[in-house]
Length: 166
Image (cartoon, rainbow, N blue to C red; front, side):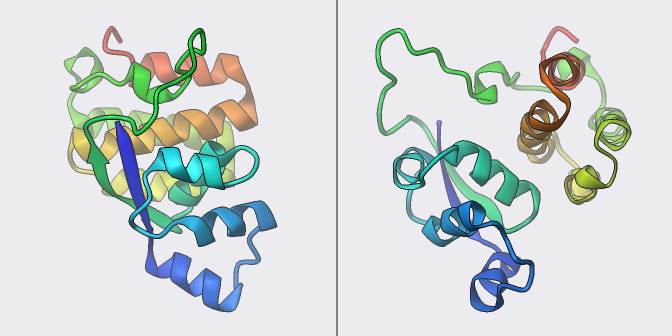
């Protein structure tokens, strides 16, 4: 699945004013987001950990997803495993739990593990009313938890909120 992002009003304001003083790597990624390029192309154009920068920008509200297309624009080299969390996404909430309960538990988990660092994403999660709205936010939360709390905590989050066998 290829994803297309665009800048939010907050993203446009950051480009114009630098009011939030984004790190140069994040600012570079934000500049490249144009509402036309798929994530595969952005990963080729953005230096460093492009996927991580895009997920941070998404979590912080600088960009938003506007389209998800059916296929990837390029294939992975032979032997290279797909490590994106989308490989783990179920099509419905794990364990048949109601979205409201899942959302509440995920926000609590994030708050306990990340504290104020997770506030922006937690607020966006609280606004999600459907599984389709919540799922990409959970994916972003998984990545942020992995980056800040380590693999074991991220795997616990994934098992609780993203694995279909939960």
